[in-house]
Length: 140
Image (cartoon, rainbow, N blue to C red; front, side, top):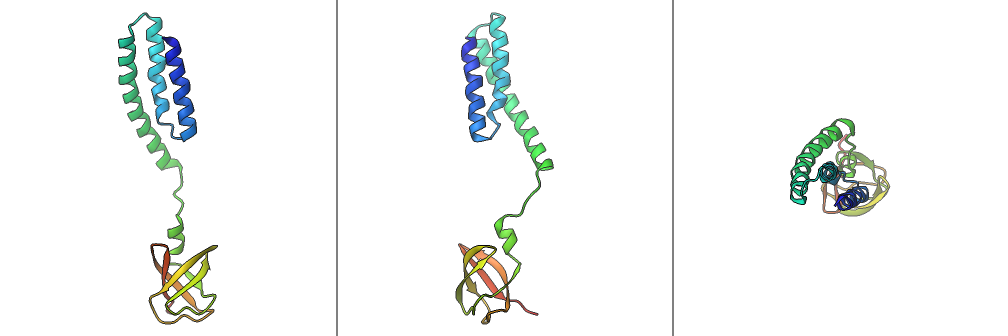
C-alpha cells in the first residue's frame, strides 16, 4: 500500500511541476499521513478517508496562503492595453479615417474618430475596438 501513496506523491509532484500550479502538491501531506497510517496498521479505508479530508483542508488552506503571498510579493505590471490607451504618438503618415501604423513595436490598424491627422502630428489612443486602435488628433 505504501508504494501506491509514494507513486501518487511522485505523480502529483510531476503534475504540479508541469503546470506550475502548485495546487495539487498540498495533497502530498495527506499521502504522507496515509503512509504513516499504513505503518500503524490502519485499513485502506481509513487511509483513504485521511487523504480525502486532509487533501481538501490543505488545498483550501494552501490556495489561500498562496494567493495572499502572491498579492503581496508580485508587482502588478501593466498589460499591453494599459501601455497604449491614453498615450500620445506621432503619425508616421496622413491618417484620414483608416490607416496602419507601428505603435510600441506592433503594427496596428487605426480608426480616426476626429479630424484628419497629418504626418508628424500627434494623436492619442482613446480605446481599442477588437484589434484596432481608436484615435483622435491630440488637442494642444
